[in-house]
Length: 509
Image (cartoon, rainbow, N blue to C red):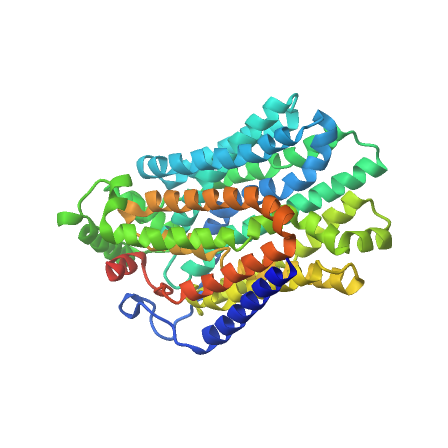
């Protein structure tokens, strides 16, 4: 076993180091004819306007609820177990309900977004979040809890499929990458909030004598507040101008574009009209939806996006998220922290996990700054192998129970999360949302997200099994090698920064 782990470790570290070096020194593949930003103009964070942040931030609030729903579960299970007397199978049902709902929500999002519009789809998601939150506050039985988590999952699937598309369609080319990073920022913030709330509830349960029922209702039902805020914000959002033009609603498109840009924009609307007319004429004139995905050129692009989603999950992110408390206990971090602060094992595990999450949030601002300057492909090429190095260091730290090993584990998990948010976290959804013509965009996003959920389920199921049979270090070294391969795959990607959606569609055709 030790020889097997050593071989995996050496291979993962070598691949990651070589890939980091090559990525930092080699030229980028660019879509040069697609670039539509004037040379010398502000890009990324420097080009953002208050209206941009208001619109994209409001749309991305649903991603905060998605992050909270994911981040709160690990801590909430500490309260749900005693409250309902859950068996392992019932715990699996609570955890799986959200994933199953997400798959259904993702599939329904495509038809709803193309038929009713992007904004009504987000409004539907917000309504589901509100209903699910009320049910989780009520929670009279396990069946109601599973139903609530399922409805929240449907909302997450709808929201996850339409928000990246909406932001991509509303943003200007110079700032699209920065704005499209906001959903990932909100997911990280929501997950962090989930950990903080469960930690606070655990302290209240110890100090104030809260029952397990009260603790579970507070931790799970906290989503009611952001759900109501999201519903209010969505009702004030304009519809996507590109969607309105495809539906022949020019006046509404002009008004929506004016709201987005904060002033007159007749020239930009005319350019969008011409691009839309060019896309829909002749042989390209087809109904939007699933059949468009079978067109050879679109199918090839979809394959690339699906592979990116698989890399995102097989890099181990959700395995690390779900099992961070267990990993930190194995490394001795929880014991060290608990004895220092006089916390229970559960409270210490939640606090240690929250500490690893916190650096992800400021890192997202760096992501926003780099997405439109470095570009999508280079960020994958540089930071995916860096994730691999962190996983290798984490695997090494699990072989010791010393204080140094505990520190290494904590730092490695934190840096892994930072590098994930700089690469495989936001890039797959951004790349999918901007790589397809309008008639295929929603359907492509749906398939891409379903691939993500499938890979997520596979990793979540197999990680504990492989950890028990092969050992956690060996599994982490395998994840590290996959991160290196993801960096190599990024070398085949065409760069899409600073280009309009219409120019990208034309160039890639």
